[in-house]
Image 1 (cartoon, protein in one colour):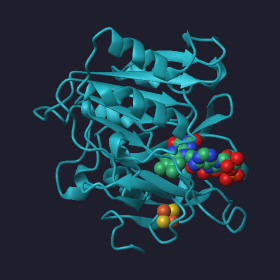
Image 2 (tube, rainbow, N blue to C red):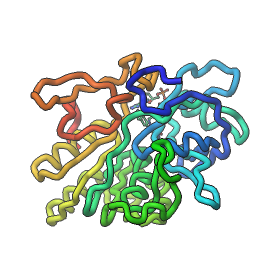
Image 3 (tube, rainbow, N blue to C red):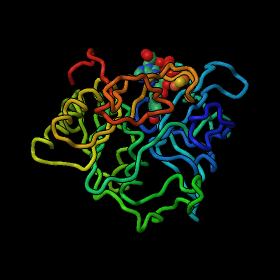
Image 4 (tube, helix red, strand yellow):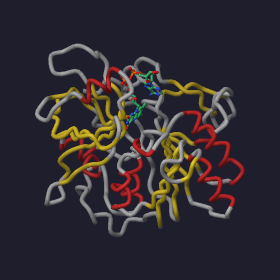
Length: 307
Ligand SMILES: Cc1cc2nc3c(=O)[nH]c(=O)nc-3n(C[C@H](O)[C@H](O)[C@H](O)COP(=O)(O)OP(=O)(O)OC[C@H]3O[C@@H](n4cnc5c(N)ncnc54)[C@H](O)[C@@H]3O)c2cc1C
Ligand code: FES
């Protein structure tokens, strides 16, 4: 069922069984959803609306958006399940943490625009808080290690190594900032697929003590010029990232995590001001026209604190 003509082709709502829901860091869980259809269709940067309530219960009523973390495949390379990684922050995510293997959840997706093809050259991902989640699948794809979503376009099924011959980025680095080391989630997942990880913590309990944008500032100052920079995290961090990158003329994208009520374009609860090519500023729905936008196009709030 497509509720909006702008919703991505193949987006649908169904009941999906939980295969795993395991803690991987403080207040942070990896949820594995048994859904081969979604696993074949979803692209890095797209997201799902997951209704965290137990089957039959009506609280919370609304779904919550979560980015694709990764797709799992069987021994033959066929996509079988979709992983999301989530931080418990409120009612919905607390309810999700209670879900057990075998229970069914209402899931709507794949939603949103996702990322474009890999840029040639090195790429840097900048993540704050739980903003690392879109970068595992993106890194695997851009490094040419995994294809995603091809079956939805009538092409070959995604499987490890199937990207031979496709263009890919030469290296990927994740700059990953959290408040404290206990919140670091999935660092080994990134390293295992060949993404370099550099860490920053507010309290100095791991890596650099300070903001994650300082790690990027240091690299840019030393002359590093990646082919693309991509950020995901709190809007104050993304605003600081956009300001930092602007003078360097390096393409920079951000994946926004605005509050969402419907997830498919109907309620306008997720709008963000986006500068148009003609210079005007129009409101765009993060759930349909995003969540990925050029950092230079976003009209960042003046109140976004310096980072
Ligand atoms: C496209 C997209 C992808 C996302 N991917 C992930 C992901 O992979 N993993 C993950 O953990 N989270 C992700 N989020 C954020 C996640 O959707 C929210 O954390 C979740 O909806 C909170 O639900 P809740 O009911 O637990 O919190 P609520 O009870 O609704 O809120 C609890 C507190 O958190 C604040 N809050 C809730 N949502 C947000 C938000 N989006 N931004 C800022 N503050 C918020 C509220 O203001 C409140 O203070 C994503 C959001 C979007 C839009
Ligand atoms: S969440 Fe309803 S329009 Fe975006």
